[in-house]
Image (cartoon, rainbow, N blue to C red):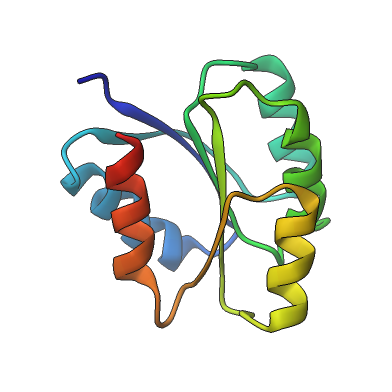
Length: 123
């Protein structure tokens, strides 16, 4: 089975420092790059089309919005998935994320197990 190539869009260093090894512990997942802003994320995605399997996107970034990143991913390849992982799990944010093209929406504080299950299903 091929490994899951993850692109992480997260501006909080503590969360990145937790998520990157946790994803690696899944066995088949590895974070290939990280972006802290909407602009950095879109630039990376534009230069790596088709090279990632899963984009994990926070909604509130140091600059810009994760929703802009999710919208940019709408033209992605069929095998590529986008998951929003946020501390702001309101129904309005969930709807906005799914409407923008996210495949899944997870609350960082209560749905990490579900998030990791989603990642395992993709690996």
